Image (cartoon, rainbow, N blue to C red; front, side, top):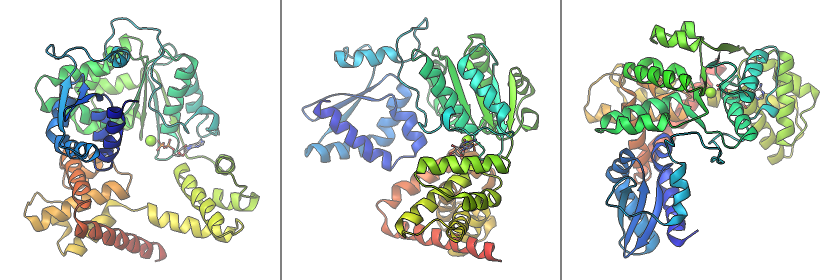
Length: 459
Ligand code: ADP
Ligand code: MG
């Protein structure tokens, strides 16, 4: 790695800390450092949308960090690769440039591994009656992508393993054949990518290129988020048709069955049902116990039969909750050097539940009380500062303390647009690093919210 590449990595790390993860991955995955000479640092992307966004919104932050790193004034130059006035880049980058969108025919060259969670694989997915069918369908699709069932539609409640199966499919396809191109994307990211492409002229073209660039499998998580944005649905419909006719395997997850999806066009729902629809139900006692034992093995401790059965009895719905409690249990046991007992498990369970199950309502109530305004003000369209700031804070807290999506938060704040929520979160995130008052206000509010929640549980 050259010096300027190292410098870029460092600066990227700093930018990552203050940028919304979604925005970060959308805009930085395709940016490469090119050179650093005479105080001019050049980066390159092949997407004008990315170039424009980075220049406009992050240019100053990047320049100031580059200047700090180089200990001199540095100017940033963003090059769009297709720009004919720009000479070809050094050979080191040519390979990667080739791997970027739209080769005419499918190549058999090894592809970059898809960006997936390494822990979500088939081998550690516990099968039981509640998820057997979904698992079998996922496994089949992973071994015959594009030829068995297309699309595969997996649905079920939160924390039951849908995302896990989706990633497992991606891993398995790539493991069997590393020339396969696989894209995993959350539907939320798809939507904001699309919205962003609309806001700048001509960028719809690049958006389409990105999603139509010879993928063998596209894995789309939480498709229910498509429901609120109409134009996006149309774009998704066209993309679906394109992918389907090109034998690209499509896998979608959703929190409800196609039939129960509100606000999604009939023609899309029909297509969702073309292949196989598989549901995942909450696991039964035996499956929960097997998940608990397996998870403990991977965390490196033995839970014992009594404690295992106690937790399998108490946690009925979410596998995610099982993991949270077990992680906490292993930390407590090793920190306090205590044996793992039912008493300790009970404590962990109680703490976990009170930290996690925080609803947006609890947050709104706490923020409204703290700033002495009404909940109606918080969700209204009024814009005076004494209301606008608490509203942004409340949105930020909903995003960081609940699992709610941008769209869900937007809907619960009086039907706003999801970009309003994104903007609020970024703004608070940005300010809290430089504004000590704001950051202590956030801490106080978080404590206050958790305290309120615990009191609710004890009653
Ligand atoms: P969903 O996408 O349905 O909300 P996730 O796939 O994120 O749920 O699962 C939540 C957590 O539970 C993940 O860490 C996942 O690994 C774990 N999990 C869910 N189901 C299983 C299972 N059957 N076996 C092992 N782990 C599971
Ligand atoms: Mg999920």
